[in-house]
Amino acid sequence: MMNSKKIVLVTGGAGFIGSHICDYLLERDFKVICMDNLITGSLRNIEHIKTGDFEFINHNITEEITVNCNIDYVFHFASPASPIDYLQLPIQTLKVGALGTHNVLGLTKAKRAKMILASTSEVYGDPKVHPQTEEYWGNVNPVGPRGVYDEAKRFAEAITMAYYRQQGVDTHIVRIFNTYGPRMRKNDGRAIPAFISQALENKDITVFGSGKQTRSFCYVSDLIEGIFRLINSNYHYPVNIGNPDEMTILELAEKIKNFCNSKSNIVYHDLPIDDPLVRRPDITKAKTILNWEPKINFNEGIKKTIEWFK
Image (cartoon, rainbow, N blue to C red):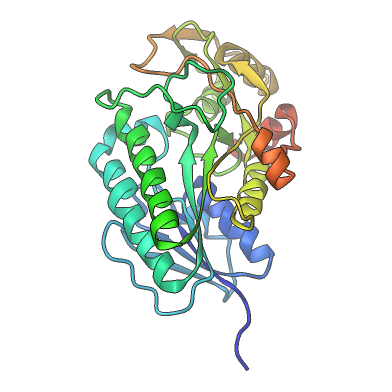
């Protein structure tokens, strides 16, 4: 008898968000092919998966992708995604956004699959519009150090829309705002893992700039529910998925210090080049098109994350 389970390819599936997507899909009875070259992902993120419906392929998607079975869905999440990663891996970041996305789209077309591109709130750059709606074109410095990530994702969005418009490929684009939860890398340069690991060790908590810059943090399980709804929708333009609750980086540091019962001091370092001063999603589209909004409040999510880091 034919196996009727739907088959999903997750690129970047051994990463922070990618591994949670693999878990989510396996729980819903999909067969999952996880593809990752482990440049920033880790086998630790998927070592708990013990099912015959899961396959790991170590492959760099900037090279040709060959999969010998039917594929129903593609979740394209392969990319360095933290400032430390894309500043250390600028050419790889640009290549996976351009060549990698091109290869993934070619595979999606050949397999007649549905595909979702993991884009980012970084396409808005240091925004002049607040909160950010999907119609905002952004304020990006293409030649600054962060430009490699911003422009890789902006190109990935453009080629994804070209395949949708010209080739009729069933594509979707999620613009992900700051996400947190278990399996973040301790030293990936993002505020939450940095602050938690510093607080748990009673080391100085390093805040960049004045700490007045704002971010909005979405717990990973909320994000993935939104992504799954988007790939199953009939909407093909970008959709913001994130939590609109906004806080300053200093507030974030103080909350984490308190939740960790930490004796750390908060110290200030210079703000990195082109670091955005504000970041908050307008989620009207997600609410109206996907009937989605985040359910896990920050205090609940951060406690779970701290427990995992312990």
